[in-house]
Figure 1 (cartoon, rainbow, N blue to C red):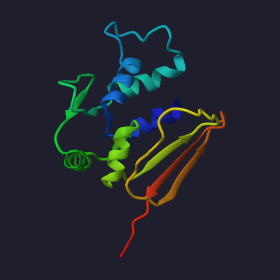
Figure 2 (cartoon, helix red, strand yellow):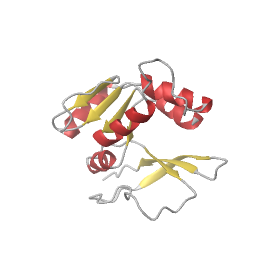
Figure 3 (cartoon, rainbow, N blue to C red):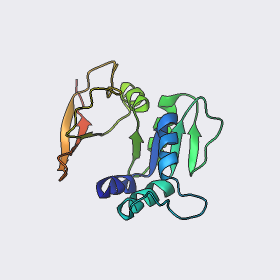
Figure 4 (cartoon, rainbow, N blue to C red):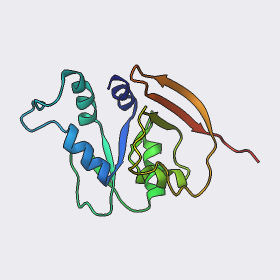
Length: 161
């Protein structure tokens, strides 16, 4: 959790699709009582506080409104994300399954970070399934956790003609 807390603190804003936004909000939004729920362990609170206060942008054509320090992203996805990237200082942090695929196809992802868990699930969504073109990546950073998980960060290589 310390690692992901630091990652979210590095970002100027978070960019989510509807499903990821709703999932994160249900888990990490601070209750109106201003007290974290009993199920939350002490070591989870710094992450919860970081994501709760982070600025968020939500890509959705079905939501009529959002709150939780969030704004809806409407219209052409490519143009909207280009505009957000120009506003940001350190960058946007993107999470989810569907939205990263759309952004990868548009060439709008500057860095990819994958977390490899020492578990074979055998089900669930396939990461970046349906990507239109192959994207060559170069390694930037690797972080190994005591759990056996590994965070791998890559940048797309720029092809020069």
